[in-house]
Amino acid sequence: RKEVEQDPGPFNVPEGATVAFNCTYSNSASQSFFWYRQDCRKEPKLLMSVYSSGNEDGRFTAQLNRASQYISLLIRDSKLSDSATYLCVVNPIFGNEKLTFGTGTRLTIIP
Amino acid sequence: ETGVTQSPTHLIKTRGQQVTLRCSSQSGHNTVSWYQQALGQGPQFIFQYYREEENGRGNFPPRFSGLQFPNYSSELNVNALELDDSALYLCASRTKIGTSGGAFNEQFFGPGTRLTVL
Image (cartoon, rainbow over all chains, first blue to last red; front, side):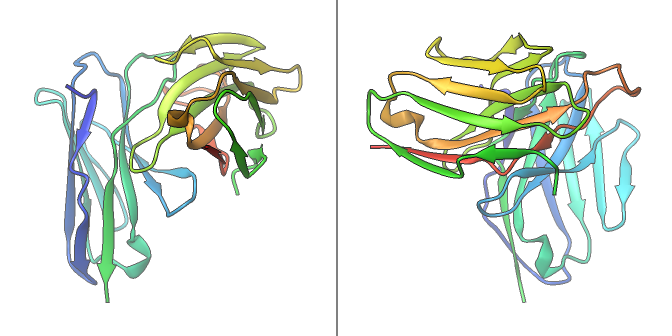
């Protein structure tokens, strides 16, 4: 079983729609959770951290369910500029920042 | 821009050769990590350096080695290249956890070096 699993997609979504990504992780002792965004042929960039209480940044909402070892990302009112690959990322060990990435979910927003 | 630079941007090598990739960290960052990203996959952790010492390693063979210099720049060396080593190699820098507060110090990625092994 992979340490971090996510649906690779692709997701092709019309502009303005809401899209949700899900991710599961295998190490129940994992400490930190994130969503990164990676544009084609570019480096990953931190989109947002994910907390048990849930957190929101504009059109983006992230949720963490530790009991189910499940992480989600919701994008509302999607824009063309949201087209990218979204990487679910887990840091298994506090103090040792070895980020464990999922394979990424490719999102294309259609005009 | 993240302030993290990598060189070269692209590289073509043949099987069995050796390669050295370079990374300059963002100013003030004393920890650097290297990741390998194969096509269609997420980045995989290779190793991390803090104050010139290896401080964690992923599931990569010993032919993957690294160095960190006093100015916190870093090198990734790969010996005896194999076809499967073809990938985007990313370095990421940050301050050591605990040195600037908070539970997580964001890692800033460089643009990567795309290595092709023929």
